[in-house]
Length: 391
Ligand SMILES: Cc1ncc(COP(=O)(O)O)c(C=O)c1O
Image (cartoon, rainbow, N blue to C red; front, side, top):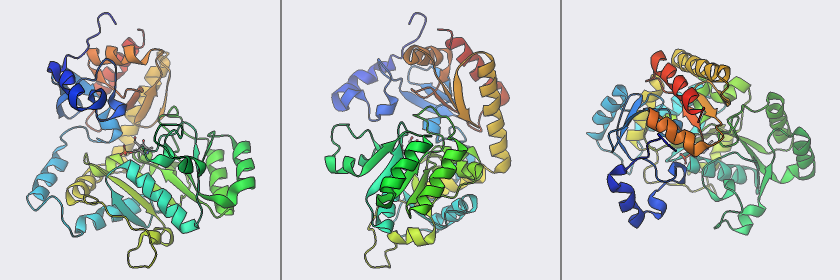
């Protein structure tokens, strides 16, 4: 790694090793020998504790759609925290965010808020099982849906055999295998869980005819279709489901809808979401001390206010231009709109090379653009990725 800077972190990592396993709370942030520590963010940039400034293409794993310290969100949050940060009562803000989400995703009439995408997927699975009275969840190999038992690598330590027995993992895009499976066991299936452009599986948009088949077969077998839009919701005003023209029974969201604060949401038809209605007997009990807190709800509303059709179109155009430039320069990449993934031969060397040249992206090569980036910034990203791809 000659010429490549590795963060010193002012000794923070050595201190972290005493109190955090491996020196970190999030496995996704682990980059050997140790990740740089952030000090401050501003718009499209982050400065680390060594004073090194980088363009932030990670945007906290795609959640900061407007970059850091977006003024309208900050101003609203300052106003809200003066009134109280959370209550043992509901607030108006959750109604307004739910209304906004239903405007964008008409298939989802009702919502429940949680504090992460992981929880949203957990709750969607619970709802599907309660609604159908069935146990089996079908998901697709390589897709990431957070870290709850049913959606991780089922051979991971700590996953009970009983959970693994109720989850079936199929190869994505294999119509024949999917058809054969539902023919045999379709009536056992509570839900099929799909991400239309799974980041971990290569950030390749799913095949349209495969998605249509999954919708058709789930309907035919009275199973639910859950579309996980935790990452992809930013792809269009109606999420990626709008681009595909597919109506799921349940949608899971997270990231951008919290305006930079912890969030998750599950939405669906009122008949399905009724499985969580506390006014009805025998329904799912699900609390969450900080779920739907007014800081997150208001921050999310403002973030979405500034993420209308035209803003999305502009941001996606920047992503398209970046992808085009990378492909022209021979850099392997995938994605849609403002999400791009690159595939260097040696990720660790490329990651540190980019970081030392002034660019931060996901440790798996994920690049998420923000509205804080102008054309000149996108051009810098392009040149930097091209440069480091030569390592
Ligand atoms: C598609 C998808 N689902 C669920 C999750 C989990 O969200 P969170 O990290 O907020 O728990 C993620 C996180 O990256 C995701 O990409």
